Length: 144
Image (cartoon, rainbow, N blue to C red; front, side):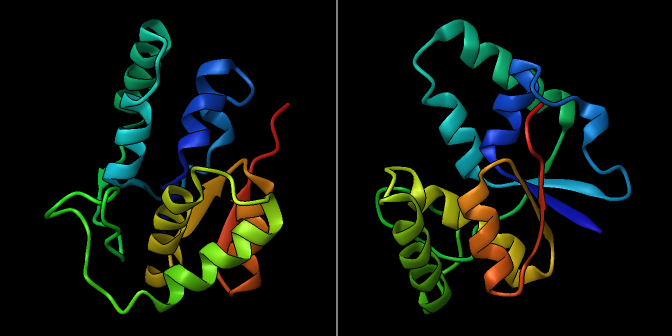
């Protein structure tokens, strides 16, 4: 069993909205460069440091994204696919949440779970609904 951690999970852990004990313990945790990039883009230096420490504490194994998006993906950390599932998922997510600016990053993360049979861990209800609609495994962690 493997779990792909959405960036919002790290935020919820830092905020105390969820605890490490709330995460499934029957498999390994995975992340992509997207989570690291989003954490590094945090403007508040103290919060960014806390997020990086939490990321290090959780110790997810880094895996490549299944699609490559210019301006978002990193060379050597994303695969060149046909983009079909990426575009389908992003269109669906855009419809549900009015095209939030980080939908590309969310879909890159979620697509890793969907394409590899991993489980996505998220506290983003719209993303959870989209992945479930397309047959993916998802654990929605509702913040306390």
